[in-house]
Amino acid sequence: MPKFLIERNIPDAGKLTPEQLTAASQTSCSVLRNLGPEIQWVQSYVTANKLFCVYIAPSEELIRRHATESGFPANTITPIKTIIDPTTAEA
Image 1 (tube, rainbow, N blue to C red):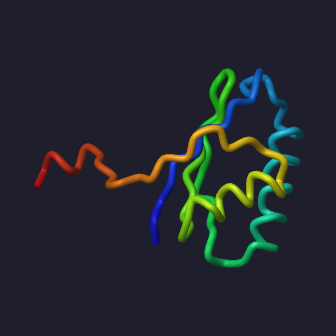
Image 2 (image 1 turned 45 degrees about the vertical axis):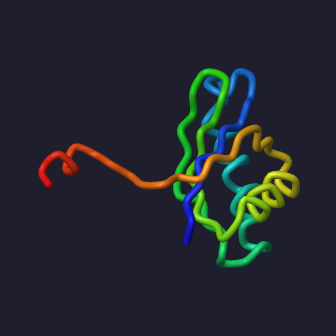
């Protein structure tokens, strides 16, 4: 199944409280449950003014549907071609 990196422009995202992040996560998970098991949220990285989220989904269209239904922007959706890390150097 394809993986995608979603860039979400959210001003002051880095200032969100733990309670606000919990509420946002609950909203996202609720929408994901309604969309079905084909789309999965792997993790997100919160920066000063953006969230970078990794999702597994069959299509970019399903990710856009999640964004629309959850109310979170999906400003850029980029297919992930491969993943490397320090262990890649050991090959």
